Amino acid sequence: MKKILTLVIITFGSQLIQAQTAYIQVTGEPDLSVYLNNQFKGKTTVEYNGYIIENVTAGKNLIKIEKEGYTPFEETINVKAGEVFSYKVKPFTKHSVYISEQGNTGQTEKKAVVETGKLIVQSVPIEIKISIPEIEGIDNKLKTKDEWILEKVPQGNYKVIFSFNQKVIEKNITIKKDDEISVFVNMLNGDFKVVDLAAEKRLKKSNERAKAEQERVQNEKLAREKAENDRLSEERWEKDKAERRRKDDRNDFLINAGCIAVGILTAILMALYLQ
Image (cartoon, rainbow, N blue to C red; front, side):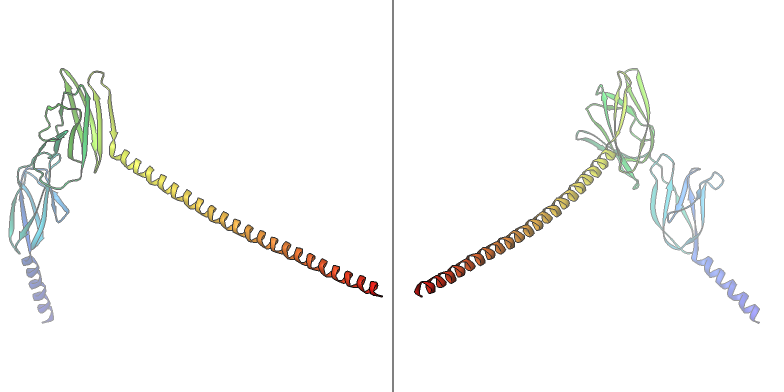
């Protein structure tokens, strides 16, 4: 009887657990990375025309779909217990950026929050064309002013193509979180320089902090030395004062003793004279 009761409880519990979970059928092109609640679940395949997430907890779930070289999609979906939730992947766009040239700006829609940096291009001559295949909208983009600024660039490795007339220079540039990369390209002689302005700023701030700390330590040392000198000066003054007092007391004693001796001698002489 106990065995039968245990079997019934296990069966009922299993059915109850199954009733509380659900599935998500992701429909999309192959080789997309699928995440649920920030956990990697797998990649979409041709066989399933996407990917099936099993044992999904009912309620709100955060789903994220990534495609290499494109801005990921991320949104919260509400899944009911026991259902098979159909999620169709939206069309991807390449990384969105913010472009400016000394105040002239144009912005495309950002699909998801990603870690970004900044790219600044200076060139000789000023008017060149710039292409970055991994970023949508940066294809033979004409640079017309001294600084060509590309903001909110998702961190990653990029092939940047500079062209002027028939001359083309290709360079690989790495952008990291909060980087501010400045490049100078000379289309006439092929010179190319890269400067990490953010790293320079961090180094400058670090040097300023080190200098400030050094000055603080030096000022504290000078203050301690001054306090010690003041203490020694006061001690010397008190010592000299005591020494002067002792001399004055000795001189007063000698004067008084002399006066007494003169008085006694005078008295003796008067006594002898009177006899």
